[in-house]
Image (cartoon, rainbow, N blue to C red; front, side):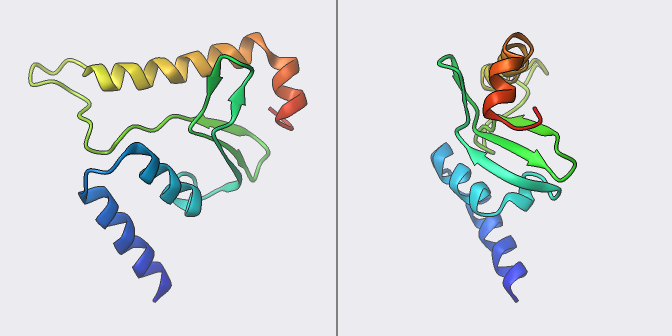
Length: 115
């Protein structure tokens, strides 16, 4: 069955230590893993000259999600239960995306319908 093979492929890629680009390609090819309500998935959406998202997802309701992924092997917490540097970096990128869109609504609306 096709769905089982895709899930098995996903489990395999999660179990290996690949470059982030490998995960990005898999998720772009199978956007249901990013958002089952996605209508359009844009890989590496530019936000002006400042940023590029890993994905921009237009949902069926017309809303956009800007996504940053990290490798699944990256830990979220240290042994002292503080956030790791990798998590803090990724979270900071998401905040940067949100601030950029807030500050550049006209540009975003021109280049990303309904944002």
